[in-house]
Length: 129
Image 1 (cartoon, rainbow, N blue to C red):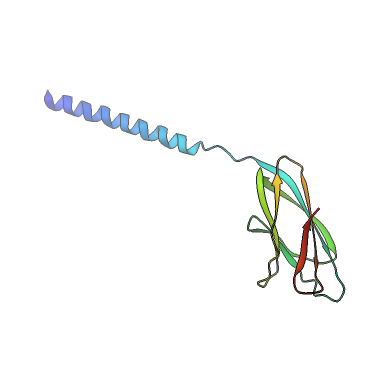
Image 2 (image 1 turned 180 degrees about the vertical axis):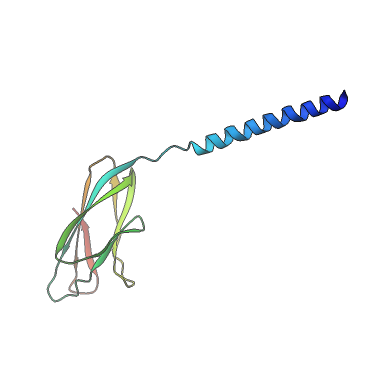
C-alpha cells in the first residue's frame, strides 16, 4: 500500500511539474508583437561637377536599404520600421561613412527626406529636410 501511495504522489507531482512547464512555455511564446509602420525614406543625391560623386549605400539602423544610390538622382524607398528613434547615414563600398542623422517614426505613412552632395573638399554634406 505504501508503494502505491508513493507511486501515486510521484505521478501527481510529475503531472503538476509538466503542467507548469507547459504554461511557462506558452507564456514565453506569446511575446508581444512589435508594431511596424510603413514609412518612406527619400534621398536626394545632388551631383556636383568636378567631384567624384561616388555611389553611396543608404544605411538605416546599421542595415543597408539601398546599394549604390547614384549622384544626380532622388529615389524614395518604402520601409517597415518600428516606432521610435532611427539612425540614417551613407557609406560607400570603401571605408568612407557620413555623419549620422536621427529621425523619429511615430505613425504610418511618414516620409523622411534626406539630401546629400559631395563637397569640393574631402567628404560629403548630408542633411535632413
